[in-house]
Length: 361
Image 1: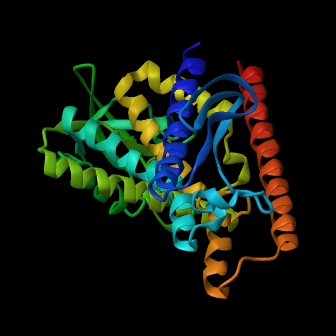
Image 2 (image 1 turned 180 degrees about the vertical axis):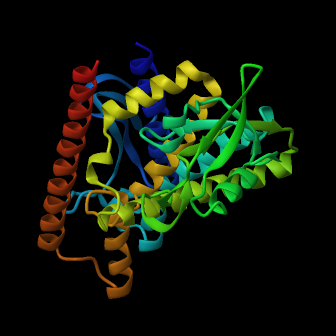
């Protein structure tokens, strides 16, 4: 139930923010908005306010803003020509289309700003606590456990994780004596580091060094920050997440990251439920992360997505005339086919992941 409720909350808010960007930019440019819908398909609820009908539709994975004169060949009355989307200058149409992804990115900045103001700026705790033991590693074989705090290596006092890493790396494969504290007790083990491949965030090999198979604890503390510092940190956080999203897409195209890592709505619902159980702060951070991802993914140059429309509008600005109707039609069909295939694939990944978990349990 937590997963379903948090999924509806997170996705509903992000879709609303995205479509609100299109809506407000359209209003700013004087375009008549006919419909504002959360979801696609059959109408579940709707109400007319002014010239716009506000809807909640049956299929929740998306939304749309329907503007007057938006479709090619749509009949536009001469008296309302100035309110037609297709009759606006190309730079205004570009802004309206770009408004959705832009609002997702701005919303992420706002979420992180609120978190940093009320909770504080997260800073990693530089401790010697072991956060994870690699299965089958030397550390596991000698009995080291998650939560152990390393006190000395070869009788030399250790106070930072950098000292832990350097001591093991500099051992050149010779056995090291590691003294740890566990539950108030002092324990000593002897382990022989092995040469292992070092991988970066995306799983690429970036070198080799001697390791035991221990990972530092990811504990953080929160430091109080003012409005200015929180605002700067929120922008930096959004930029960094956007950069990682773009690099992640590139790595997936390069097949560095396996396509099986892609997750769909079921995976999002699972993670959202886990974050809600961990606390509202975690859920809001996850919402910010997802908002960045949604903004970046919508800018991909795929027809049907906002990025595809932006490419068409850019070409129109260069050519001084829109692309041919036949070209647009073929492009839209290709875009629908690509997105449909991707949707089926991520659902397949989600279902396979669920089945594997069920078999293991």
